[in-house]
Image (cartoon, rainbow, N blue to C red):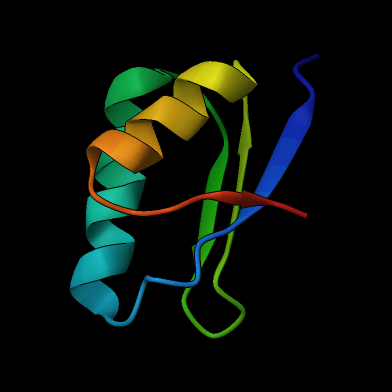
Length: 66
């Protein structure tokens, strides 16, 4: 079982941002469980933490550990 990673992504401000972050994670972590919540600015996913963090950064957002 993969460990769950949680990041705060406070620069997600709209539904488009949510979709962009989700797509970046889906592309970087095929088969991962992904949850992106605009209200709490939380992103949760299973799989490689470093790959997920890099995918969020490459999508133009700033993941912060929680």
